Image (cartoon, rainbow, N blue to C red; front, side, top):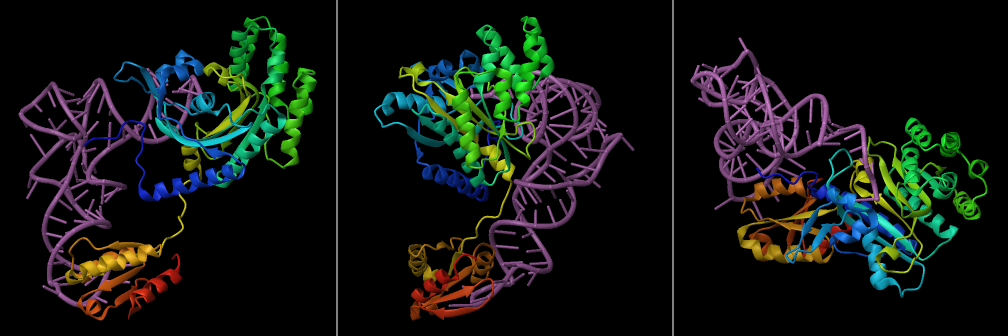
Length: 410
RNA sequence: GCCAGGGUGGGGUAGACGGUUAUCCUAAGGGACUGUGGAUCCCUCGACCCGGGUUCGAAUCUCGGCCCUGGCCCCA
């Protein structure tokens, strides 16, 4: 049998409804903060992503040439596209710009728990506000969105400035290597990397930086960095709103374009792939030919959130099954339409089965059966049978619709 | 790319010193039943992941691949 491609998934209706529900909550929370949804192409010029992240990521992407020989790729993430869109057509909008998105992305990686080759991200980008308030808003929104989904998570917020300040004597490439060790919490590799570069004296301060429980401790170690006021203000804003997070100045996020505040979130009940959100302040627009505008955003691994919260019961929906004998087929369509017009999900019989079999089927899939035979057609009535209680009555169509509507959801 | 464990009808499974027509449950479709229920009974549908090898004979042994699950690396 033909299999679906590796790392992809099929979603049955129950799961699709759960996904739509959570997705909708995320959108709704973002909307309330003023973040309006945007959409960008599913594929882009390959160059967009190599400009942002380097050539090395090509092997992780679904790249192809279009029929004109242009190098293209299915998007591996959304931030680059949104910033490209900003440069293309968003520059004239009043700042700050608040956008959100929900989109599937593609990466050619080894699938494992919570990691798929086609996966969905919900994210926001706040463009054009270079302030502590902007940094704090993005973290607070992330917290709000994640809470709305019902996922249980730990949030860690940091800033790159103290770490970079300590590493300022090292070459840029060396800084990156050391920061990667820090990000991974690999103290041995960290010590080795520093030793090799004649910077062993930084080992203890850097390790201590990762362990800091408060912002005050950070500056005892890193000294009075220029970003100090902004960092203190950002964290004070988070504290003032009771956001549940831990300061973590060991977060490096490994990427060149992050410029200041960075944060991550982890689901408590997932395995190796437990990071469900990552974000921070960055500068990208200038790479795509725009102004060097400050931005801040996050991306949530939607599928991991869904894995983390697991299956949950959906709100039941009242369903009626139209049971009709062959002489009532057209009447059955009229009756179904009346229920649909009233907002009720109505399914007509299509199987040319006997009445007993139709009712048996309706009993499995519906809450009410609306029975139509010669008698009802002649009398202009319907027989409404409650499939839970077994009670039934022969009444007018209008009365039946009212009865079902009043019943509400199961 | 690497490591470990797996793969039998749609779902769940039995069968493994190699040997009849591959077991059972469930789901689905039909019938008993042309005006009333999920019961019961009967029938039907439907599987050994793919390919090579060993063998008279492979679901079973062997090799390779694919896929799944988890982990490593990576994680924009």
